[in-house]
Every structure is written in structure tokens, then in C-alpha cells.
Length: 200
View 1 (tube, helix red, strand yellow):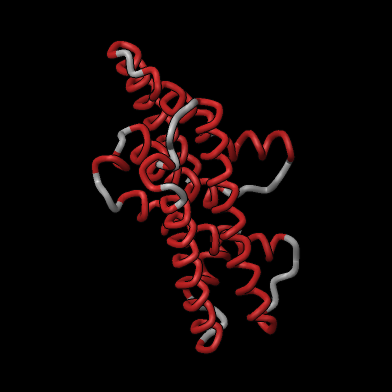
View 2: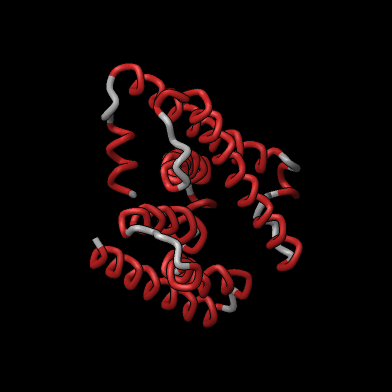
């Protein structure tokens, strides 16, 4: 899995650098920051692992890398967000699904995951997802203030775009949480538990 991660990180970073050079040549200065930060963002799990000595498995890194490729590289750098109307909603829905699964892994890390406390688990999973979604929107807001951009589409939609992003992430979390509750009733070794075990 480490080799697959290395290949994906290398290819995506190389493509981002090529697009960075192209954007310099055509004078698209508003896109340069997004282009050049891709390699840094892709290496973030390894940086965190190295500096803070936090256990981040290569399976977790793969999930993260795939999400960054879909959301930031294809969405922002390739600019699919502006070319396909539903792609932004898809990315936020996917983030809701992935962060809810990540919440289960985090509970396992801290030793607070307990099958008997399923409603606490669901509450934590949903709150964790909404926290991540909020932090993402804070980041976009800060970027707009600093770079004088309109990533959040405030000019077009006011707060509607931000609310849609958070609601669709919430919907992804709800779907995973319902699946978790159903699995918890049927089997202790369901699909979600298998994913969490693989990511640990």
C-alpha cells in the first residue's frame, strides 16, 4: 500500500507542478497557490507522522490521498467544480462519509469505542464530521479574506453555498451512521467494522 501511495502522490504532484507552470505562462495568478500547495497537502500525513509521532497507517493515508486528489486536485486545480455543477456536492458528501468512518477509527485510538454505547458512537461520529466540515469552511473563509477570492461564492449565493456544503457532509454522515446502527444490530463484524479494522 505504501508503494501505491507513493505513486499517487508522485503523479498528482507532478501534474500539479505542470499545471502551475502552465498557469504562470497564461498569467492565471489566482490559481497558482492552489496548484503549488497540492504536493504539500498530499505529504501532510507523513509530515504529521514524522513531527508529532502520530500513528497514521498507510491505509488511512491512501483514503486521505484519494480524497485530496478528488476534492482539491480534480475539483480545484482541474477546475471540475466550475465545469460540473454537482461535483462540489459530491466532494462534500464524500468528505462526510470518510470523516464519519475516520471518527470510528479515532474512537478506537483513544479506547472509547464500545459496541454497547452505539448512540454515543453515532453522536460522536456526526459531531466529528460537522467539526471537520466547519473547519474546512473556516479555511475557505480565511483564504477568501487573505487572497481576495470568492471560494465560498458569497457574491453569488450569500451563505447558501456554505450551508449546502455542510448539509451534504451531514447527509453523508447520517447515511454512514444509519448503516452503522443497522450493522450493529445484525452483526458485530460488518462492513464498516472491517474498514475500521483495516485502517487501524
